[in-house]
Structure formats: C-alpha cells, structure tokens
Image (cartoon, rainbow, N blue to C red):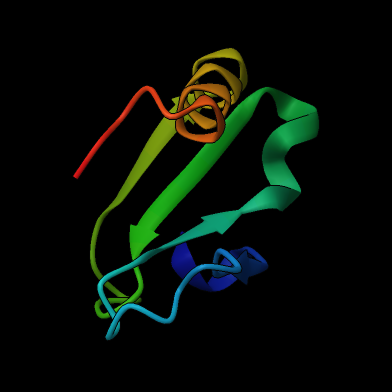
Amino acid sequence: MAAQHRWIKPSYSSNGGACVEVATDLTAHGTVPVRDSKDPHGPTLTFELTAWKAFIAGVRSGDFTT
C-alpha cells in the first residue's frame, strides 16, 4: 500500500523527524492513509475523511496541547 500513494509530510516537520506522512490521493474516495515518516514500509492507519478533517480543525484551533 505504501508505494502506491503520493505521501507528503506536514509543513511543520522540522521537529527532529518525529512526524507522520499523509497520502492525499485517496481523499476523493473518503479516506486518508497516515504513516510514520521514519518507517515508510511499515503499517498505515486509515481514517475517514470527515474524521481527519475534524482532527485537523482541532489541531488548528488549539484543542490539543503538548
């Protein structure tokens, strides 16, 4: 599955490599695959597009803290 998609890293991925990559080419099908950028051949998690959009909205509004 990993080799079939166009994977992108978030623009804020300058945190020492601890980030995820997202395959945006399946959003038209309603799914968003996510993987660990340090393990590109490892497992992926797949989220429904609506759930992913809710997560991104929460991140942008500051709902999650470190």
